[in-house]
Image (cartoon, rainbow, N blue to C red; front, side, top):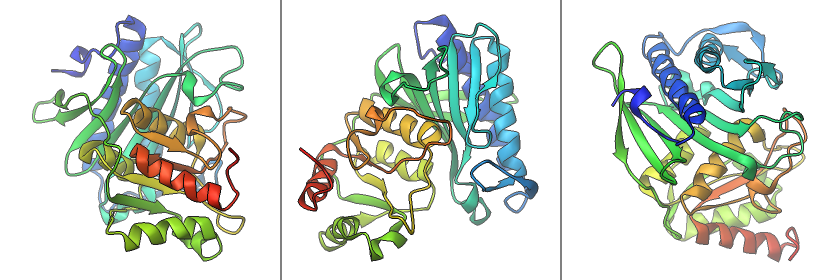
Amino acid sequence: MHSQHVKLSDDPELSAVCSALLLAFIENSRVLRYCSGGGDYTNTQNDFGDHQLEMDVQCELNVNTELKRTGFVSHTASEETPEMKPLSEGGKFIVTFDPLDGSSIIGTNFAVGTIVAIWKSDENLLIGKRGRDMVSACCCLYGSRTNVVFWNEKEQKIQEYTLFDGDKQGHWELTKDNIKIKPKGKLFSPGNTRCIVDHIPYREVVDYWIHNGYTLRYSGGMAPDICQIFLKEVGVFSCFGDAKNPSKLRYLYECAPLSFLIEKAEGKSFNGKHSVLDTEITGYQQKSEIIVGSADEIEFFKSIWKKHGLLKE
């Protein structure tokens, strides 16, 4: 099953965009496989102040190149270039993405990923829209194997495809169909725990997980730590902060697409006020707090927020 034969939508233009992403992920996988020592830093920083790896830049280029070839994407924006970049005049879609999520842990040979959101193009270039306006999303992981969790808009379900790259072209095979996240599951991945010194509600939740037999599985990469929820079909990932240690996660490139995938798989998301998908887009460098995963676990988290007066009824 080559990338062009994986049909993820009845809309031929959206299907072409999805196929272009699968091709870009094959190229990214090869870039990562043949790098040495985790890659070299460039002399540049992105707009968030992060030092860029050469692989960050190359992975972004691969995605933009394949999307441009379709002619169906009007603009893209990425974590590396958080502004709307014109791609194809008259294109029906906008794509926002994190080309290499987890690049700070790549030197330790941990899994890293590419996170993507696909939106309908509009004259306001997403400003004023919400996460629920997304038409599709995916997350590709580059680890001991390369796999992608994709929303199949045609079949209305979350699926996992795995890359088999023994030939020169590479091809994707369906390896997990119709993923559904169970409402309860004792697995947790707590991000930004340095803030729990002063953030009492967040500390209370983390303490609850620790003292009630939950399994800690945290790599420091958002893409792998959330994708394990799909493959194990249970668990939560969280990242909250305070004034001293705020969350650094980006809404358009990380939080919105991963929350979209989680909710399509019957999980829930929460940002301290409401579902992550109910956030209004106000800019291309917008950040967000987040917890996503098993529905009952998210409801417990919300109950702690209510207890501390942080969530209005």
